[in-house]
Image: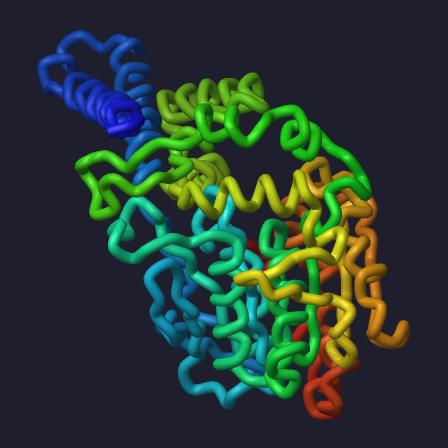
Length: 432
């Protein structure tokens, strides 16, 4: 089958490197080497440990790793990740905090489907949990979904968001990060047309390509240069025999990872060299900074071919959201129909993926929304990752987001308790 052999070849190469790392560790651990101490054995062991761990992570879904959250009374509450709605291509999960009253802020955090799992937003989730009743979209790896489950493109993605919003109710506050920003906007407009009473209360759009032409970047330039036929030939393969989705056309996670690393190959190469040396000297730890970052960065997932190709063609090339020309099953979705949902746009001044202006374009499309319900924030010095994780998110953006939710909720109790819980969560985040 077309490109199935290539998919299996990539998996074979990954598996071989994982095996080589494990073999190097085993060889360096032979007791006989203790009779002739030599630093080369420490280096072999260190190379094996780093190599085995790195290649093993590429096919493992990371755990959320959020065990407890501190309540307003100062004591720990255990956290359970429960599936609220289960669907073939993605679930709606609820982070239920045991022993804590239901929080007045109900938040749906829409995670990107762009090569990494929803756990990429782990720190975002952890920072919102003290103040919110939190729900997250947990997208599935396409390689694990049988062909019999059918297709999944950007229209299907949008309808999933519509279903999740409808299920959670009109008191929901939606936060979309990166890739899903234009589709979350479209899903809200779809509800405004079809079921106005099911619209969310507020919509926060963080660093997404609503109109890629508003501020061209390397990402948008690539989308312009490559034709759809070239892209299909370069990026699309069929899932091999090892996984349940055998035969499904996908954009493989391993191929995406190769692209990610090639963009900053010198920096990644130096990071792994330094980690090998630290491991050889006994200075590395299981959960040190390197492992925390690369355990997540290397864990990649396949996207369905139709989702990837329709994103490039309809969002980047044709600018269907940016031109307010998006449709679902041939039915136009008019963003101007949004008239009651408060919308806030957040961008990073140093964002080189969704450059400043691409997300801000959403406010111009909201022709039916009063100016009093629109807001925007440009975070100085923040790159793409920084606007939803790290110091910029924790200290500046997150408090603004919660204040925006409160200002449009009419819930005085939530607003009164906001400041103290923000300070508590920010202090906890600074410790980590």
